[in-house]
Image (cartoon, rainbow, N blue to C red; front, side, top):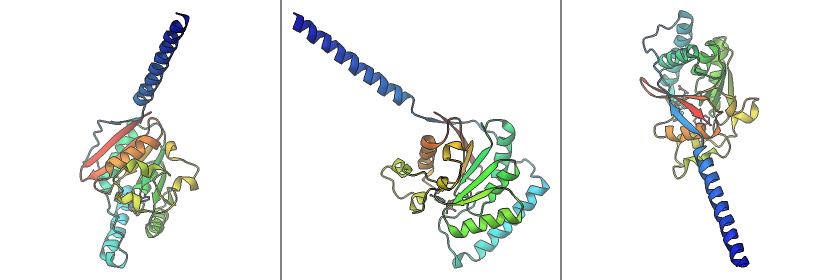
Length: 237
Ligand SMILES: C[S@@+](CC[C@H](N)C(=O)[O-])C[C@H]1O[C@@H](n2cnc3c(N)ncnc32)[C@H](O)[C@@H]1O
């Protein structure tokens, strides 16, 4: 009887332990970070101030020169977003009070235009780019337009994040064998209040996963997915 009671007790204890572990598993499962798609109504007809238009005209010239001479330095992964609409979206976000901070990071900043526009809107702005030619161009763009942003030569993917691509190892952003940029800077990915990305077609889910795992609680992800298609997400830890 005593042994039996003991077994019963041990059995109960095991059951209790097992159900506690299960609860903890469920708890950690329930607590896995989430991305919430926010209703974000930016004004696509908002008037762009004259001083910003001068910066945009400089960007147009730089881009035109680049496309005219593309054969000399083809960068397969570079495509520009609609700078004016992205300015409208960031400008709207800036005055909305949605962001929990003032730090901005552009993933794959190309010629640095969005990084520069964000810095002009008052964000502490950092652009990360893997292609050295574009890094140089972006630094020149900021300097020429007297914009205070910073451009880092490196990988915007944090170390280890490639596992989130699972079986899809052909995403454009995985092709850069270059160290993570965050290590050169005092801001880690989870220090940014706002990240902007224009992902290559087909990899927006991967980039969202990277953001969901590595961004800080409450951080915002603004994604340009095509003309007029700008989405805003918030991470909940
Ligand atoms: C589609 S373009 C977008 C450029 C710019 N953000 C814009 O919206 O106009 C993507 C850029 O990201 C860069 N890029 C891609 N993967 C990267 C990575 N893992 N780390 C850093 N830069 C990357 C590419 O070189 C390219 O300049």
